[in-house]
Length: 164
Image 1 (cartoon, rainbow, N blue to C red):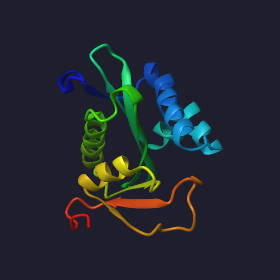
Image 2 (tube, rainbow, N blue to C red):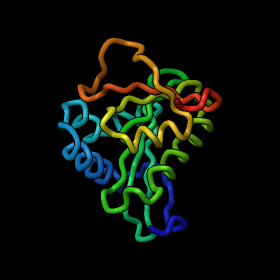
Image 3 (tube, one colour):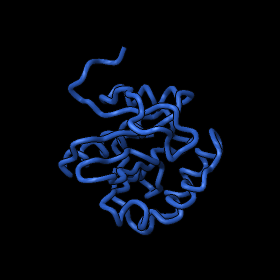
Image 4 (tube, rainbow, N blue to C red):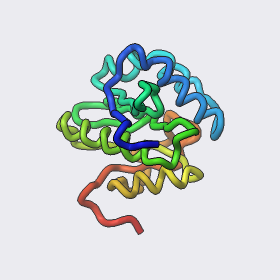
């Protein structure tokens, strides 16, 4: 994948089906698609965008969506990094890092004060990416998660200690 041909773009209705397709493929491969996944993926306008959230896409030179990530607004200045996925045929080529950096730039531009994510310990490459950009492991601030698969909670601390 030629990195310069990759663009990070904001959500547009033309990418709606790609948001669902990319995420469903990943979820079906690694986990089980949960009811909350179907709700959010089926209607990102209502569940992410209408509440001040954002969805970004990595688009290749042929205008094909090859990855996506969302910033879901939880409260003033607090966002969840969620629904990050890269198409199987381009994984390992830096697309995930480009999406992550785009999401972090957007978070800063929004004046965000807290960015967190929930993940799973079996997703080693994803956890390594998160750690490399400043996410640090924390105990979950509330019992349970809205995702049954989540057993990792991380908060972005760009000036925090390096990962152990």
